[in-house]
Image (tube, rainbow over all chains, first blue to last red):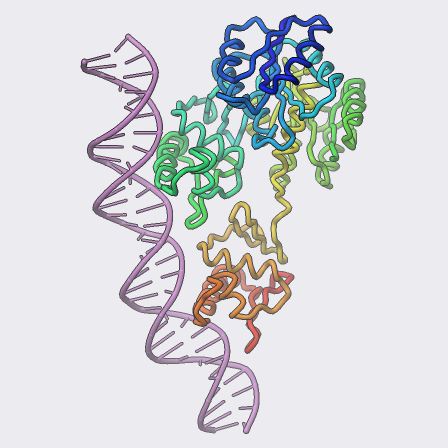
Amino acid sequence: MRLLVVEDEVRLAHAVQRGLRAEGFAVDLTHDGVTGLQMAREGGYDAVLLDIMLPGLSGYRVVQALRAEQNWVPILLLSAKDGEYDQADGLDVGADDYLTKPFSYVVLLARLRALVRRGAPERPAVLAAGDLRLDPAAHAVARGEAAITLTAREFALLEYLMRRRGEVVSKTELLERVWDAHAAPEANVVEVYLGYLRRKVDVPFGRHALTTIRGAGYRLEADGG
Amino acid sequence: MRLLVVEDEVRLAHAVQRGLRAEGFAVDLTHDGVTGLQMAREGGYDAVLLDIMLPGLSGYRVVQALRAEQNWVPILLLSAKDGEYDQADGLDVGADDYLTKPFSYVVLLARLRALVRRGAPERPAVLAAGDLRLDPAAHAVARGEAAITLTAREFALLEYLMRRRGEVVSKTELLERVWDAHAAPEANVVEVYLGYLRRKVDVPFGRHALTTIRGAGYRLEADGG
DNA sequence: GGGGCGGCTGAGAACACGCTGAGAGTGGCG
DNA sequence: CGCCACTCTCAGCGTGTTCTCAGCCGCCCC
């Protein structure tokens, strides 16, 4: 039973490693996201323990990267209680479970065993609005039977809107969340990409899932338009 | 955190109920679709676990019914691997996530938590006065079944009046709160916009939700006029 | 009944907003 | 190195929205 632990707090990492080894696991350890991702990629692990706050590459991104590569290794996220990343995000990008620090060793062990026992993980959640469906992990979008190909940015934008389906989302919020947190207030990109999205998910189907609320932002209709 | 479990396999249902209670959820249980729908309707649940294959009324139809009634409680569908209903169908009618039986308990828990946290988008945060409804998050207004489109300013004005429904609000206050805190005392704009609003939310319906209190201001009738 | 004041409304001008096509810059890949 | 896909900027355009203004209406009080 091989485990990979990616955790930058050295003392915690070693404590966990020692404990898990005592339980009979073979434990590999690394302290940053980039190495962690590479090691996980090479496969052979029955589960990965992944801290969210990591130097180099956040755990969040590591999960995202692995799932995008169709790598479904069970992942248990470790999140600091007050971290800037929410656990929900982690699960949303395809982690299987999470633990909030500080956690008890017993709980860690129980969760880990359950995770490993379960083996091949299920597919992660799919977002839906009417007949419009988006699978965050598979990076796939479809309207009814028809598959839709989106670029990375288009996909991220649609994903964010689908998570907030039915609500108005302002251009500034989209800029911050889909583009960059410190983005310049150049909201035109958003308009441009909304145009792109419409031409791919609405126009060919004669629908209008993407509504402009003038002066407020955009809304993805909960029923798919 | 209240959950509703609708599942006809009694042993599975009880196992799930016991497990979730141990996690601190308050779990109600029922074994058929009709009762499940009624219980979900009465509301108060943070999420619903819904089997697809049910006696009486399929889980599929339960979702459909709830969504048709604008009930946005998060729903996690449980589908038998070889069921005649496809998961996609469930998502199409408005479920939020699905799990294929057999599922691991950890996965169920993680999904459930993600669902609850991402949550019933606090839909009850809808303002209502009689049959006049305003949803700040969706930026949507409706009188009964009929949707009403408002411009940004009209919407802001109506929202403010609805938050103070039943009270008299002066033109100066509206100027300060809906327009600009440092607005010039040009109160005519308010009169103009009240006219606009009346023509959209009152006149077409033969109602008078917006009352002028001469010399004092305006009042939005609590019963919608 | 008349005057005055407060509120209503139609018209129109100025403006802001959002959409789009063109095109430049960038990075990956053969 | 060249090609291609993608991202993003820019400027122009059409249109919806906001606000002002002037005239009118009607309530209220004398």
